[in-house]
Structures are given as C-alpha cells and as structure tokens.
Image 1 (cartoon, rainbow, N blue to C red):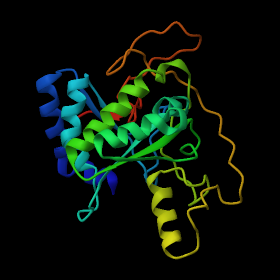
Image 2: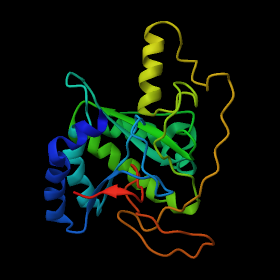
Image 3: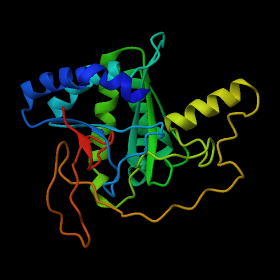
Length: 249
C-alpha cells in the first residue's frame, strides 16, 4: 500500500519530485528499494519499503516538498508523519544528554519526535518518527535530524534494515509499518498496553548473520572510498534509507 501510494500510476509522484530535484541538483536521485543488500529481490509480502533521497542539501529539501505529502496514506490524517531510519550509533547524537537536543528541535520546529526502543528487524537501524501539522515545519525537523546523523553515520559499520516478512510482534514494536499498525490495533482492542513493546515471548530475537556496511562519509549524496578494512561503498543518502537495489525514475 505504501509503495502504491508513493509511486501512483507510472511513478508520477517520484517523477514529479525528480523534475524539481534536478533543477537544483542534476545528479540527485530518488530511490525506492527493490532489492536487499545481498542483491535479492525484496519479498512482495513485506509490508515495509524504503525510500531514499540522495542529493545536495538544497536538493533534499526540494525532494521532501513532494515526497512528504506522497508518503501520507491516510487522507484524513491531521498530522503529517515521516519515519527515518537512523543507525543506532547515531541516536545519542539526536537525543543529546537528557534529551536536550531532540527537545530543542521539537521546540524550534513545533514537531513531535519519537524513536523506537528496539531496532528495526534484523538490523542496527532505529526508526525515528517525526510528526508535524504542516509541511515546512516537518521539513525543518527532518533537515536538522539529517544534519546530526551525517556527523556520525560513517563512523561505524551497521547491518541495514532490509524489508522482510515476519510475524506480528515477533521483533517487538520496532516502529516498522507492520509493527506500528499491529500494536495500534492491539492496544485499541485492549489486548496490549503502551508498556508491551518487547518482542512476543519477552526475548529479543538474535540477529541473523548478514554483511555489515559503512555509510559513506561527507554528508549529503556522499560516496567514495574510506580507508577501512572490508569497506564497501554505498550511496550516502540523507539517512532515510539507502539501499543498493533501486528503481530510478
């Protein structure tokens, strides 16, 4: 559903965003992942998809102008909502001591920022949800988060989130679309409370072995060699998803 809402017929939303993006950054990309990091097709049954805007800082703002509204799939939603995937080692950079940094962003932009206590399934990435009632405020908040993530994202290799098929609650409330919808339904029915965010059975599921990767250094759209053992360059991106397999419109 999220994929269909983003793409529309023939990729019109992404093409419209790219037309505006290329006016300020001819090399900019908007990417919707089709494959995982092992170059395997993402399962059609997986309920999450990953969108990346890879561009200059100005290009990212232009891309967000189109893609934030396109990612809203509840027409009567009072608040805009975006979910960023942030490497777990960058979370302290966003929150600050005692939450002072994230509270400052909320006060300055008028947004609400919430991060999941658990990483996304089988990954070292954390879902950070941003809520705002208007587009400009949402963009300002996302840009500030992105700036903070870019300061540290290349310092440590991570296992990135690859959308996968899993049972409801299997990994706990990770903030994925599948988890968020299921937990919301269960709490509304009174079967769960806000305190029931741990994986079903009470134990965190061990991560399946997969290749770790470093994010590229240098900020927006950065790529290129880093002198680290085992480094494999990947697209730099703004921190809202960056996968090797993609559709380019």
